[in-house]
Image (cartoon, rainbow, N blue to C red; front, side):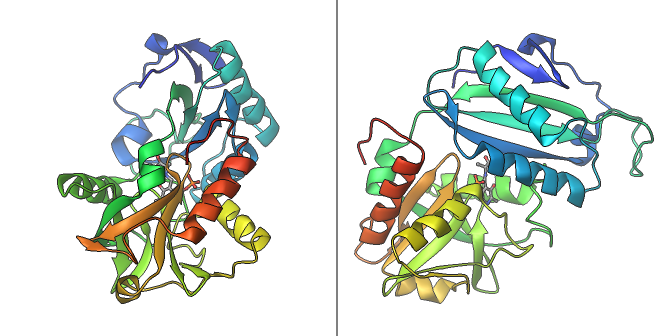
Length: 287
Ligand code: PDD
């Protein structure tokens, strides 16, 4: 996927080839940092404010001092798109770590956070959005603070890889049969006209698209019930779908090789997809 040449490094812009970190870097050595992935449609950010808010929540949770205000980083991210003359569909990746320092678990003193952000093209996944995707289920072996968008993603990476090796798009995480979220998205079940999902506790990432799904549901007068659901519930579900900045609102039509509902994207999911396209000002739509 095409990566644009101008990147944000700390609070300055530079060519991506100039981005260099020493090997004693806390993001690299400890995963001691946080990140955001922000969707772009036609060169314009979608849900930028929500992502910046979450970045600051994550920073506070790991006691990381960011060297900018919300307004400053917002302007820098907007400038990143301008400098790259970015006009297509894409995403920006932003990362902040506890900086470069001799390796020691204890926080370094007077060390600045390392920040970088870059932007790249990311076409919409029309085929998946239209036909739906399949998923596997895996035990959620992550820690207790999944609401922090931390760089520690090994359980997520391993689960996603297993999904791929099984010919699937996503891995649905569960704890003792209770579904939490997916490896890189939130997940929802539709039954008898109601949307069920895990509550926004510290056990899941509070997705920016999830917030929109809740709003769209209210607009459509569809109950949005945050009481969670189990793996057993999936076997009798009418619909299942996931949401994330990169996947949007995507139907899940098969889980562990068994069809969900009638094996096709359902009405509720499709209505939410329409709301998403309107909300994100997506001009061309084939869904
Ligand atoms: N993933 N849950 C997890 C574990 C995630 O990693 C993500 C996002 C989400 C959805 O969050 P949002 O709606 O704010 O994108 C839920 C991003 C896209 C990633 O890591 O690439």
